[in-house]
Image 1 (cartoon, rainbow, N blue to C red):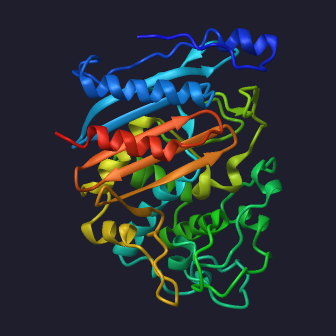
Image 2 (image 1 turned 180 degrees about the vertical axis):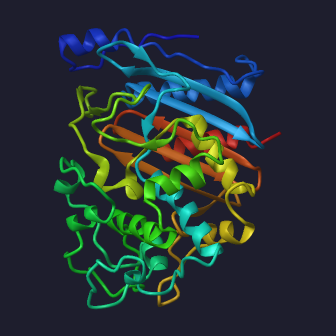
Length: 368
């Protein structure tokens, strides 16, 4: 099934001509009927979202118990070259990188190689001591007091040779509050966690992720978004304005933010990840519960966040996941442990409402 999008109102002549050729290309899961009622409804939801939000390209996958129930690509991975999105298209996953990295933290903790409650300097001795000690558990739950990015931090053009060198970007910034006092989202905290993983494991962070997380789960199309590398099937990245006007996103070097938001993946690879976290391939039940348990502040208030995972209720059952956004990317991963269901949505632009869209797909596919 394909459908031509109309050019966005207010778009320039060249962009309008390109958008007029954007076809919504579906990739049904093997053995699934594209005409089945829920797949038809899911396609309608995605088509409406792509058009309403002026999304150049999107990929979605829904899986249960190791089987892809539905997988589809919509629109263009590259508007200028008219390359359609397919199941192989690699998108930036933004802060879903935190959930990916959380598995490394849980593995090292479960194996006795990482103490979550000692100062991070045990594993990263070069990180300066602050007015209060910071632990890895506090970093993982956004309770550390470290700041989040400023606007000028997002579009990074400095190449850092290692995760420890990347700490130079923020290591001297003061804490916002006493660690544990309150929840305050900080991607810098997760960038520090990458150095903790490296120090605890004794191997480079990216090597650990490849060997202990991605390879065991068959995530062959997941890895770091290296700016200078030639990466097959990597999408282009776009900035979309409210009126639909679309521009190429600025060049970004993600070497400062691997654990916080620097990985590429596909929707189907993310469903493999979600299923792997629910199973025993890379995590013990103890490690999984560490990630999926809501943390609390020192005053006892729930944060609604575990260690690298958002934890909330959907229709009376606990679901976990993470959203992601970066230059030219918006993403959502939802895992429903009760129904053993995983939903992943990736786009190559900034857009809103993707979490609600993932919820609708989870409801649609929850029934057997």
